Image (cartoon, rainbow, N blue to C red):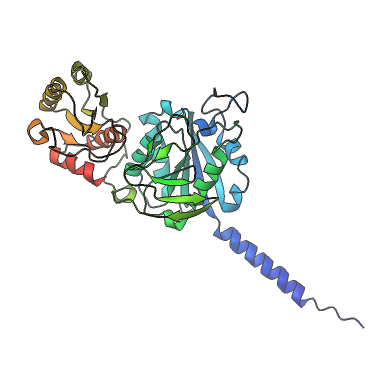
Length: 354
Ligand code: ASP
């Protein structure tokens, strides 16, 4: 008589089922919030420069990334579908409030935000200041539209999810994943209008590298962010107007007067060199400061910081120095700072803390 011993087979099935269930249980829940951009862009052919940003839905973008659902349980939400040149405070606030709402849910482990690259650094820095919680928030975009030959969006999105599920991403603030590099919101900037390798963090370097869903982290940004930030957008629907004025040789000073006349509560000068501007503009800016407008000296130069009292006497003229923040990020920090009454020295401290 032949005896069939079924025990090894049953055991193998049991082990497989338990292992699969364990793997499923281990998968993290990631919400992808889509805002538009070239990553959601489409063109009539795969080899033409002209395209439309924000033309593809989040569901279609997820479907175009093989293996993404093996890494995490993914849920997509469409927050907006615009080219990021049309990113507004209204959309930024909506996005941040949605993240803050989902941050409290035990069913959500992390976030990916798809976004155009033009103003990616602004939304990343804004979220870095107003998101409440430690779950990873990872922004991603692409330089080529989804229909292009060698579109960069799918692998960028895959890598962004790989960072969002990584426990090592925690505590580093809002991150941006583009072309295999992981940047901190504080330090990155767009440096090329067309190159795939457009984002750089010139002063601080990258936070890490993402390779097909696996990450190496090199450093932790030192500035306050997310759960450590004092900024609160609860109940905020509008931000105070802060203008950026671009300095150049023979700069007309009446741009500063016009900004004040149009109701700006703050002005950021994208100064030449170490936050400089010509004599006429210094006088106009000092007048603005006397009227209670907060004047921040930043720089149009791609790298380096702006220090207090170097060639300009900030103490005497009542100005703030932007430290490492470029004009577009300085503007966001100042807008949030102006939501409440603060002394100039408090505002100056914000620029070295965030
Ligand atoms: N104009 C596009 C945008 O910012 C560019 C891009 O996404 O690369 O939405």
